[in-house]
Length: 176
Ligand SMILES: Cc1cc2nc3c(=O)[nH]c(=O)nc-3n(C[C@H](O)[C@H](O)[C@H](O)COP(=O)(O)O)c2cc1C
Picture 1 (tube, rainbow, N blue to C red):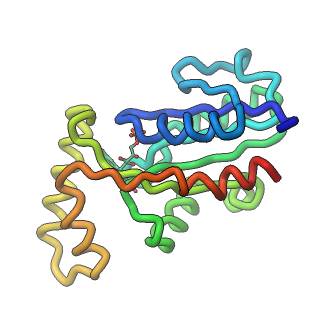
Picture 2: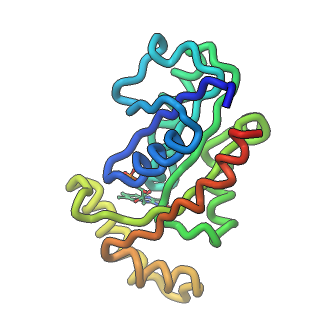
């Protein structure tokens, strides 16, 4: 690939890092944890790919990634988000993007959702507590939709629904 690509990620339990590593390997891009990123070491790339986890409806690290991208001089930003929401829940995923990108960004920034899972054993205490509250709310909710009942069944324990195949649309976009 002629383009110089940098893949930057923010990950807590490892799913986003693993997807970022897969993408970097596939396209031969540089790879960087956002903790190490700054305007200087992010400059000189044609494309910046940023990946962050979904966290209570927000893409974690996206604001910082957009700032760094703005300072980097790169000409294209591509964003991916990982989450426990299954890929099939298209309405939820689309709403999530509408809440994280402006209408202009939605049309200019290619964005991809990659289902991942939950890793309770690697979650910080505050996240485990948030999940506990969310699980209790789900349990109490009356008239649950089929999706909400399914959600209630799976969110209480660790699960891995990630797969390499989900990065294919993003790879196609990069190779375009
Ligand atoms: C407190 C908390 C909130 C979360 N909120 C969402 C969410 O809004 N939507 C979603 O699909 N997944 C959500 N998740 C699941 C994470 O996005 C998922 O586990 C992600 O892949 C973690 O990425 P990481 O392993 O790179 O840290 C949440 C997880 C935690 C712990």
